Length: 85
Image (cartoon, rainbow, N blue to C red; front, side, top):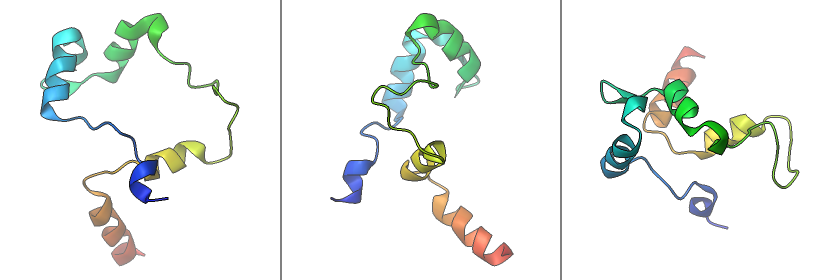
C-alpha cells in the first residue's frame, strides 16, 4: 500500500483556514487558531478522544498519528537530531 494512502486526506490550506475563520471567527487571534476557543465553540460536537470508535488502541498510537502527518519542518528536525546526537 502506498504511504500516501496512510496520510490524512485533508490539509489546512489558506482557503480552508479562511472558511473556518468565517464560521468560527472567535477561534482566531492574529491569524492563528486558538484551539481552546475552537474546542469550546464546538462543544458537544467535538469527538471524545478517550473513546475509540472501532476499539483499535495501542501504546504509542498518538505518536504514530503525529509521525504519519506530514509536517513542513520534519526533515529539518531529523537532521538537527542527527547532528545533536
